[in-house]
Image (cartoon, rainbow, N blue to C red; front, side):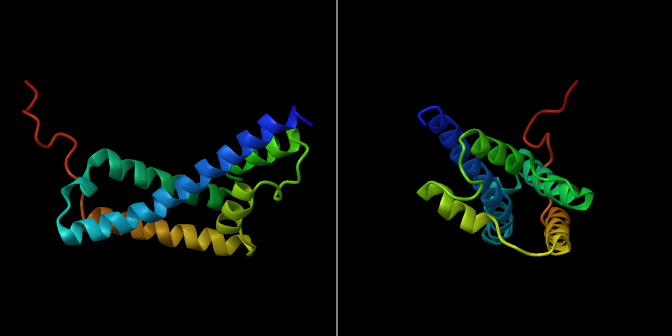
Length: 140
């Protein structure tokens, strides 16, 4: 029983990371739009915008390819090693999974991720990120 505890904790940590990434993708888009409307220049930082675009592009690609998210696979594997049910366990696990996972046909997720990705691309065009080299002297 004691050997299951580290796996359960690691599974909870993976779940927290997963929810954090979802919050980054959703919250990042809100920050980009609100930040541009309020004149916050940091929301157009090239690295931030590129990471945000890459995150939703990865999610949309996984959906189109029918691939399971590696974080979901890792969490399930860790829970199996902990001899725990895949989606029952700790307080953190219970509430984060209720927030993150829900039942719907796969096409609903593919459509949702694709539309969200399209909105991110539109904001990239409408609120372009700063140039990678802005503020730096030209290379000689």
